[in-house]
Amino acid sequence: MYAIVRAGSRQEKVAVDDELLVDKLTGDAGDTVSFPAILVVDGDKVVSKAAELAKYEVTAEIVGAVKGPKINIMHYRNKTGYKRRMGHRQPYTQVKITGIKAGK
Image 1 (tube, rainbow, N blue to C red):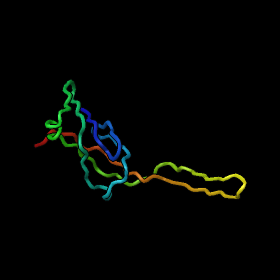
Image 2 (cartoon, one colour; image 1 turned 30 degrees about the horizontal axis):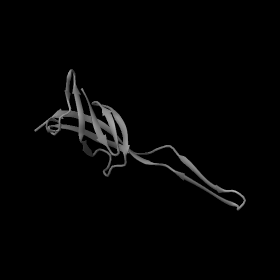
Image 3 (cartoon, rainbow, N blue to C red; image 1 turned 90 degrees about the horizontal axis):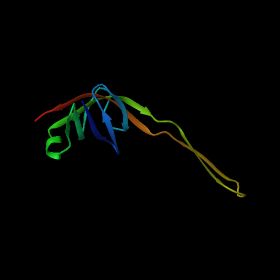
Image 4 (cartoon, helix red, strand yellow; image 1 turned 180 degrees about the vertical axis):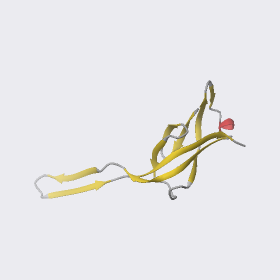
């Protein structure tokens, strides 16, 4: 069984015990979060109607906060002596999927 969930600004394919990186979430390690399901596949059965998807719940546990890879940015203008170097590391939250179940 797997589901397609909306996690931040992206859609992710998840199954139970999968670990994934999502945009930064509020909460500490060990907290539980839930994601809205967009599609659920259970064997041969595919659920995609909004009324049926409202019954499904995808829960995850926050493992911790991590940072993405370093991105180097260089601004340069010719013949003026203007040089600026900047860097950026995107903050992410690592989560572990704990359950995909039909509730309600």
